[in-house]
Image 1: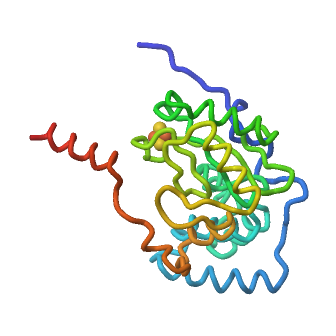
Image 2: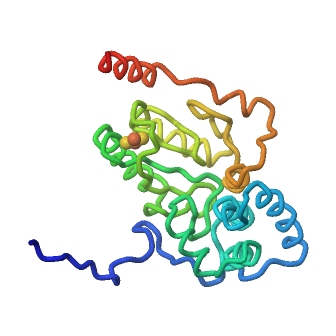
Length: 243
Ligand code: FES
């Protein structure tokens, strides 16, 4: 029998590219009455979709992230009070999922995939180049508050590697040069359309959509489209292998 392996708990903390824990100095700790009333109304819509209120925690975390740009103590307290949970319950979920941010986020969250396929096809080089170009570390935000760059894991778009995501929309087949041009366009207020999917909107608007509210922008839903040729080629190969 092999010896058990013990992992020291002290090694766990914030995600590697983040410099802060959830309770960040200066973060909002309470919402004013008008914001609470607005969030209460939105939360009621979301909670009503589930047989048990606590099942609405993930949408509510997106809702408070839409309010603050990240998960603040005020957002944690709001979710806990609304759903009858403890703050510890809320924090344990918020820290499990990497889509919930622990610090202020730029208007555009630029995620560079550095999981294996994207990495070997240029993802690592793209991340390094963007950080150098913008003067930030991974997880950091530009001084003008427009762009946050972070390392992300596979987003199931490996057939378009290397992939960069902006507010969770896909920019496929990126190079160092195209990724630099992308962030330059974001910073000058001329966001290009994603390779697939709806046009970009700001990080907070995206968080509200992820909470489960409709995207009312004209053409946004129909822009989702169908699978592209690399995806369909993979599907054909899988079917041939089955037969
Ligand atoms: S490895 Fe990058 S999308 Fe899958």
